[in-house]
Length: 113
DNA sequence: CCCTTGACTTAGA
DNA sequence: GTCTAAGCCAAGG
Image (cartoon, rainbow, N blue to C red):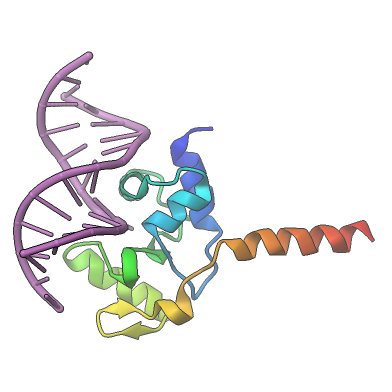
């Protein structure tokens, strides 16, 4: 399991209608401070089945340049992500990875009985 | 090993 | 709001 796979798994955790920043993904994947490498991972191969459009820049900026950026915005709007000007409304749509840990804990509590 | 490349981020000006 | 400069770090040449 390499760096790319961990980043990939983390991106898959972001639910529909939410987004996360490169930095947040890096940290959640266990590689704090490697935001640029997250971008590198998304740029590479194997994007099929990956919700890459849910990863945005700091403050909800779209970092993908050119037409691809517009494409990303459309894909997000279709998922229900709100925009405020040229940025994602992070207050509403930023995904908090800590919610995953809470979910896991409550799931375990249920299965334990 | 050194150098370059980024879908990055932060801090200043 | 914009722009630059510097820090950042996995890959690839």
